[in-house]
Length: 281
Image 1 (cartoon, rainbow, N blue to C red):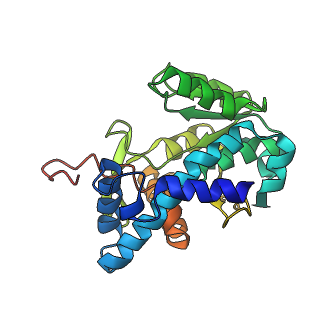
Image 2 (image 1 turned 90 degrees about the vertical axis):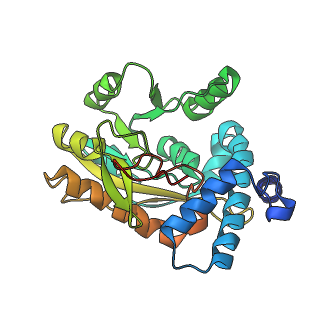
């Protein structure tokens, strides 16, 4: 059945501009095309367009298969999700832990894996949806296993999250979005200055957190998903928050190069610009 859902998702995202459910001139397609131009300028234009088509096919799959992640039984999800690496590190570690989880399209799979394959409480921040029905469905889907909690980015700020971490929760942290210059710095991402949050480095230092990278990906067809719990960073934080933030971006770049179609290219990663620079979108 997952193979059928995967095929339907590809159709939803559009196998190509002429067959796309999302129009070729749509804003998200323009953003994705611009991001690929900025991040992969040496790639021939035809190859970038092929990559963009593959990305939108996977984006459609991610939207449709979210229903599987939010409603399938835990037993079925354990069969579909293949975990690799040090999945039990946070559960066995006595101190505070931060998972760094970049915005690959299978991000929600990592959230499910964090509750089905280890037992430590998980806390994260999410973007509240303007549609109350969608927001309720998202919260239900992400919290239905009873292993964690989420805090709205526009709620009480970071205090509830910090309290949860101090009580023992693992922080499921998404470090690669442009939220403006508050608590951020311009750090290169694929050679382009990107407003990047300093919070991961600051929190890791102030709360004495061990940082473990986590990457989720789609497997072909009906094979399911893979979530890699990578080795914790032993020398992080270094005490230099700007260098630590550069380290995160450089690591994400390496992961993107391994599966470029699966990264979230439709986010305006370079929306905020240094003073005097023109807008990129």
